[in-house]
Amino acid sequence: MDNTRYIYPTAINPPRQVPATSSALKMGGLGMIVGAAGSAAANIRRLNNGDIERGQALKNVVRDSVGAGAATAAATAVVGALRLGGLFNVAGLLTVATATKYLYDTAFEPQTAPMVAVTEPAVKKAPASKKAAKPASKAKPTAKTKTAEKKED
Image 1 (tube, rainbow, N blue to C red):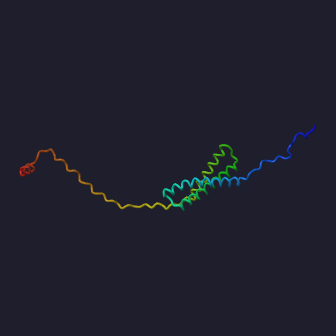
Image 2 (tube, rainbow, N blue to C red; image 1 turned 180 degrees about the vertical axis):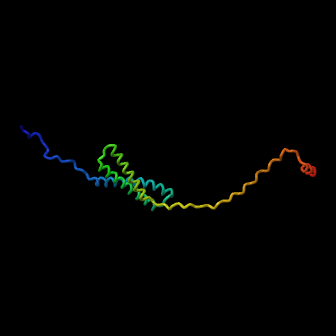
Image 3 (cartoon, one colour; image 1 turned 120 degrees about the vertical axis):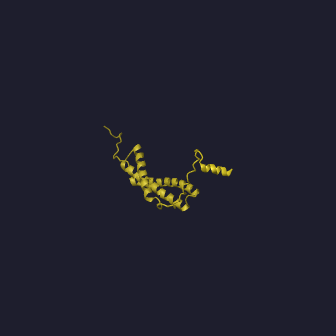
């Protein structure tokens, strides 16, 4: 039998696998860009309203973009290591990215001064006014009231 017309591969090369760190870093960079864009949009509005100053706005954008990049990189690395597919891939990305961003924000959120309770001086209440005078009773007038009425006439 002549086997010259059939071509058999001499070696089967498995598909080249990309290291998880390389794809995680690339996705982390993309996450930083998207996070910076979202944060910049929010901080521009706050800056125009006069709520914050330029330095604070820039600080917020940098902090948020680094957080978004770290969350995206972590999610990509974890889901890539688990080799999830389909909807599990999306659910895993969302879960890990949300948890990472939450932890990042908790660790690096600006610390505010504790609220101090301000006590106001006690306001003295005005004394309760006396009850309104009772209407004249419908009883028969006494001798004193009769003499007082006659003197007025």
